[in-house]
Length: 57
Image (tube, rainbow, N blue to C red; front, side, top):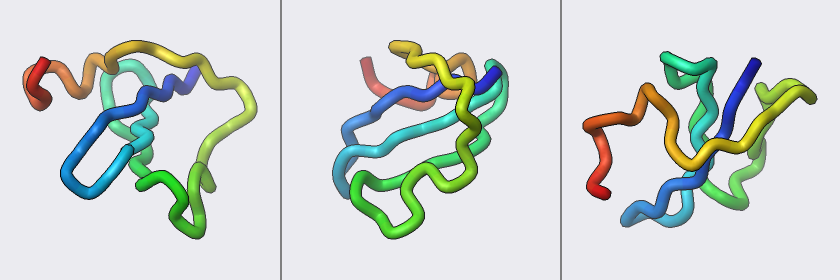
C-alpha cells in the first residue's frame, strides 16, 4: 500500500509518497511528472511515519 501526504515548504506545496516506513516519492505541486511513480491504490494520511521528526508541527 502506498500513502500520500502534502507538506508546505519554502519551495511550495510538496506531495510525499511512502510505503509506511520509507519515502518512495516526492513532487512539487505542478511539476511535469507529478505523481508519475504512484500506483492506483493510494491512501491519504495526515502524516507519514518516514517524516516523523523531520518536520515542524
